[in-house]
Amino acid sequence: MFTCSPRNWPRLVLRTAASASLALACVAGQAAAAAPASASNGWVTAWATAMQSIPDLSNPPPLYRTPEVSGRTVRQIVYPTVSGRTVRIRVSNVYGRGPLLLTSVVLAQSAGGAATRAGTLARVTFGGRAPVMVPSGAEVTSDPIQATLTAGEPYAISMTAGAQQTMTAWHRVANQVNYVSTPGDHSADVAPTAYSRKFTESAWVSGLDVREPDAVAVAAIGDSITDGLRSSLNRNRRWPDALAHRLADAGHPRVAVLNLGVSGNRLLNDSACYGEALERRFDRDALGHAGVGAVVLLIGINDINFAAMPPREGLDCDFPHATISAHDLTEGYRRLIERAHRAGVRIFGATLTPASLPPAREAVRVAVNDWIHSSHAFDGVIDFDAALRDPAHPDRLLRRFDSGDHIHPSDEGYAAMAAAAPLDAIAKAAHHQ
Image 1 (tube, rainbow, N blue to C red):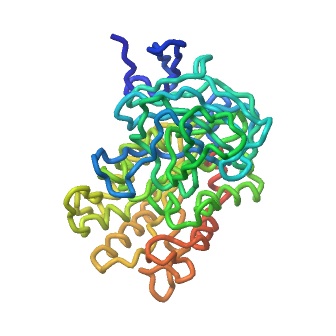
Image 2: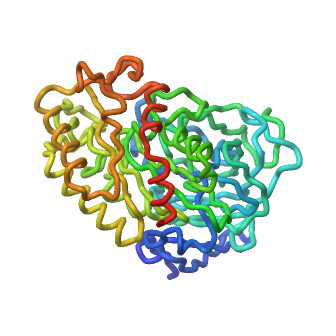
């Protein structure tokens, strides 16, 4: 029996036969976790997202109900952060509970909403063929596509699902409206008419690469504050978006910024709702993208908080309710630093932002931030805490930076975070200078 293990084959190229059975073959690629910018063969990831499993429940709460995708086309809008003329798309089934069958994949320029621009359509192939079947636990990378991508402009990736396909994994907080069509292959449609269903998650596409030998990528990885929770829908106002704009404006247009945040994510513990622990997903989600030369790490506030969350019957997103010390977090940071350095990647530690915590939990946050500053374990420090805190009440967000829940920044707060980042240091670290 032929099998493709994601543990042994971290990057797969699948070839499909034009038959009902879609016979599979897999080809080993270079290990993504050991691929710094100098070893990416001219490719750099221009846009990416981190996938999560969807709770497997017969009657899930509304937040975890998926759209009907069987025999329909999913159209997702993405914004690359570097430009290029040769493109490839990475399709993920890492958290799938069965094979993922896409019968057609198309890339086109977005014309707003679910519409695309006529004349920009590029059909995507895998091993020379249009259909692709991705085994559970695997990711695949498409053949190179000749298409011009411009940084900051929207592009639509349209994927027609097999007749029995369901959605069992996604990125839950996309802060971007995406679309599902009525039944049928509508991947080449220019008009938005068939795309009757909207959803604000993203699915299946984990990365969009361009061939740009002089470009590098910065992977921003963390929890909801990196994910951009409570930022404005469809406006790209997360702090990694603002950082990408600042880098381009400062004369670093060939530095991509990738958002690998997952809302609710923790450093040390998995969640049924909020994904694998960051420590477990770090090699794939931060180090595994093409051209990554630097990482910005912001994680830990949920580790501190979730012990105090009340247990819930049924779907308990905060389980396990583990009590985490400052030492637990800093030792976790040390392990990530070691893995980044082993892969030839520089890593910046970001201080944990104010969250109006009670005194005992606030003491843990302060201790973690003191260690980030004083340990010199990271290659650099970005002081998001100082950028956002109220000087009169340093355990709280400054009012104009508070989205209203006293934890997540407003759009202005996210912009202030990006403004605190040392641009030249990040760009030099990403280029390994």
